[in-house]
Image (tube, rainbow, N blue to C red; front, side, top):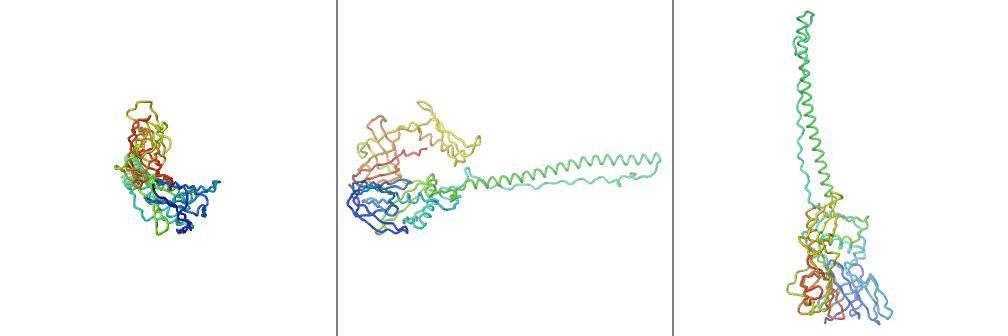
Length: 443
């Protein structure tokens, strides 16, 4: 059994801590979580000269493997001289705080957005908990970009090619047009000249109309292309603006809501360590936290102390998944995946995410969701002991470990990989409760 020690500090809000107690007598249950703050719950034993205050007192649980940090958020007198205390993990302290900023993220790493919002929260007066953000590395993911991608339209508009109107016939060019005299010969010559002029004028008007119509068509073509280009540029600019991730104080966002948005793309984990004789915390953010541990295993009847509850989760089962993305009506992004075969009744599940703007992304999500919803049963909780199969300290939240249950219960033999989402230990016994899920990502 690990030797536990429980420390109490007072936080000054400027990153400083004052030790209040170095060996608090209590039963503690520290919880580490993936992409969540974690927590500590305590039942403090009576007759101890220690004062705790919510949002000032900090609890640190320690054994030979790790530390867990928690800010006291709630306390309740048990009536028997004891005290029940709830502590929230370091990031959880900031999560409910308002994000009083105006930020715009375009083509930006969500890991950096997550880090920056916590760093901003810590920089506010009275909110410094000494978190170390120096470990940031680019995750390679980008948000705030249109999906599907868009490119700025290239202007390929030919100037209008206008033809010149042919010169109008000139009466002076027609001999005898102005011939004077009333003799029959003079009248006939004058008439012929004027008839020829009128015929040429009629032909000229036709040719002028053809040229004017061509020029008008060229003008229309030019104006239409210019308007189309202008509209394409506007659509491009609008697509860019629509895709930008915004944090706007007047919409009353919280730090936690921004983090939750970023956690759709990246994962994070916090660890506590000693900096001299005071605690500090470090955050790790990446596309995927943890690793597959092929040398470790959870075996029911060996290091898994109780047969885990098994759930067939009928509401999540599907033979057909319809995924709905952005847009409305007939223009809505829609994709579906259908099982090639199934031995029972067909069942359709709808999933909606308006942030998805491409057919390809929607199709990928539908196929992934169908795969997850076809695999059954589900295991969500394990009670494990410190054992050679998987020593405490050799695994952490985010890790994937093989689970084996050959007892042949209703679920039959279970042999599957599970991913650890949370680990809760207790100072009373060398046992841990793990929250797990199947290793393949579900939806």
